[in-house]
Image 1: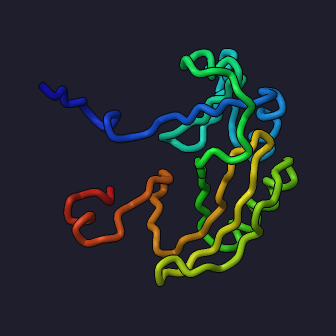
Image 2 (image 1 turned 180 degrees about the vertical axis):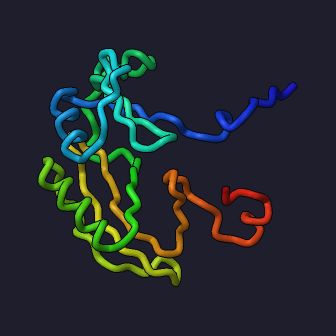
Length: 163
């Protein structure tokens, strides 16, 4: 018997938790990026990114033990790509510069790209704990005022997904 989960929680991500080497250093980085510290934090430092997602920061070793994994060094790249979408190429440049000034490592400076026939502008940085972030402007993507990705197809809009 399959249990149906109620509401939007079943199909949304509300929080990303990152294991970090030094919580205070990560706090300083994300605050320099302009993200807000949540007063609800208690040992983990939560940053509100938008109305529907937050980042939790926990010591890497603690997080590994919490989920029952062996404590191992943080890999340089683990296959995870986080992204911030800007509203223009100029905004991408400004976000990128802010990240580098806050201590990020440049992996690739922003450049115009062809994404399957659609233009895009993006660059990649690595935060102080090795998480890779793409800072991008994708004119073909529709992003709502609440920072939600909106459908770009008529079928998606007809289904009421663009509210």
